[in-house]
Image 1 (spheres, rainbow, N blue to C red):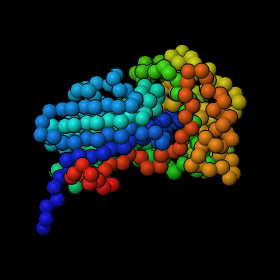
Image 2 (cartoon, helix red, strand yellow; image 1 turned 60 degrees about the vertical axis):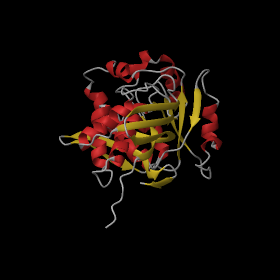
Image 3 (cartoon, one colour; image 1 turned 135 degrees about the vertical axis):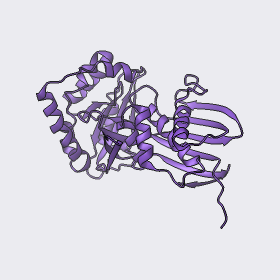
Image 4 (cartoon, rainbow, N blue to C red; image 1 turned 120 degrees about the horizontal axis):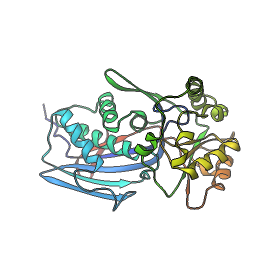
Length: 322
């Protein structure tokens, strides 16, 4: 039997994600058509890190780079130590905006290690999800990044688990991305330790409705994205985002804070006959483009239905989908 050599390089593509989606706090996630693309190669020694795009000149290029840290953690899990590592990252996901940039980095690093390790026959998505959730601290963003579509995630005694949902094709995600950033740690620190029972009951009902609206009835997205658990509590840390959110919802748009913010996400409904492949042409999206605050970007996107992808190769020009 001919032995197949272990690959020495992989290309990993990981999507941006939006977590919470209003009432689905630390549970719901959505993969978006904005990606980081990373080439990771095993070398004969040392570490080199190159970064282009979002975060270039700001992200570290040593062992503290989050992709490298996740890669090393996965290597420990796999009992494998490569001699050297080269990482080349082309980042499309805005950093520090509540769009899952850290989850994407963690997912990319863990997937790359799993795919390159000579001692495992295939990537184990369940094991990857568990490790990524430990490294990231919670599973909502990493689940959507790994699996694509919309996801629901939870943690048991054996680690994180997730279920993937197919999003109704009549939904177009639209992002309002500010120039400022917000630390997830700071935003999480503003949340109270205790919430009223009525707010908890409201969140449970709206989260259930959110699932139905995302998958079957987009007309219910406005009600399904109503939140009482975290958005108003974090408003002081992102007043411009809070004001935009209030204005959009006052006009009937299904707007939420993306993750911990400060990006605002609108789940815009497409009218009959409108083409999902060109969301910027949809009437509801054109209306939103006109509402972009000064200094912000409005990004009409698609739902990424694929999630993270890996290509393996044994030569620079010999890659196949994995």
